[in-house]
Image (cartoon, rainbow, N blue to C red; front, side):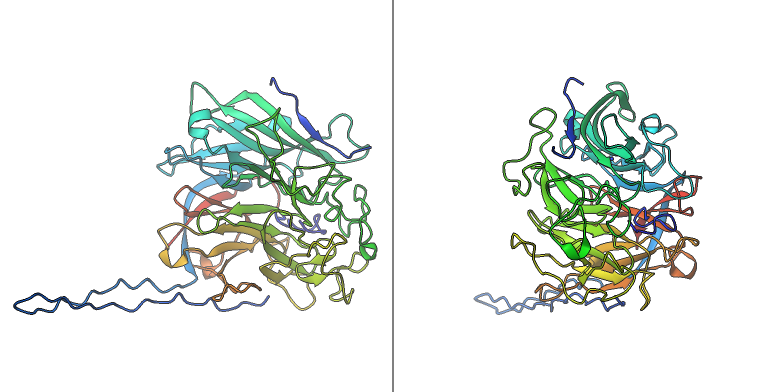
Length: 485
């Protein structure tokens, strides 16, 4: 998340017969949403030999006009810090909510929060700071065939494992669990199989929003290792001397600052898909790179099934990108679409010009959405971007295909996050997507009035909003809402 992680949550800143595979180093201003085009009514004329008659005009149903206005229906409260929500494709209608403190909860098909958690990981995790922390249970993903195999995956922060670099902070763990054979609403706590372990030099920038792609492979986003300015311990030297050190641009010293892609149905405990882009000899799991803290990511369940990634910036710019195989998304050469300076990160244009490609000729891909951070001297829209989801439900037909995302809060002290909605440019010719604030009609002032922690989506494409009144993973102010008309 943010370099000022002690001052505010930036992205959260507001996750065994087989042996575990270990990944270790080898010796803008608001814009106007375009309206959807309204098809004209079609009229047709039918004739018969005798007598001639005219068929009545066929009236096409006019789609509702888009307005960035919704209500939020509360489904659950009393949580600490709900950061992820997902739903297995098992016909049960259940929603599973990952609470950062280490619990997975179930909201059943009747919108009731079950009393007992599905899974409790608290004894496996590093101790968390109640006031602010970017570690914890950060991701949850169900196998595409969960209905038949009962397999699911979590990403959580464990104490630093034996053999990790001395002085580093903790180890990120991606593990597989199975559902209990006796109770579909309980996981088998003894079924854990560790899939990956990634040592983390700092406590922040942990990302964690693991997800399965439409190809059936597991995607694992990793932050750049934490700290600010990329000069802390654990940041490798890279090719760009202006900003010395930066795991986002290094591909061989460690896998940090990247999105990994693995096949958990082959190998022991996984294999690398044959069509991975071959970016790294040391870490062939690497699928895309150049990220700071890709805290929340999600595939579009419709359309072209693109992968949307919200990447938390440092002091000036927040960004969202559509990510594809082999792409380099610029950090730490760029912050958003702007040149970045590790020496003077708070000053816009401290570096007047920077490369548009890396030494291998791979372009540094600019985001589709960016907005100024709250610390930007020109004024900003939020402290950290919270990546969202593409709406594919039926409750808001005019929102189909629009990207719902948000910002954690304007600052650390008050819970004032916000929701945005963006649309693809009409000509689809690239460039930045226009977006608007979302008004919440049943909240005071039309505002969220909470810290925004994440989004979720069910199998029908409806969207959920996860919030808390606290800046850290503690208390019982966490809530889960469904977006409704």
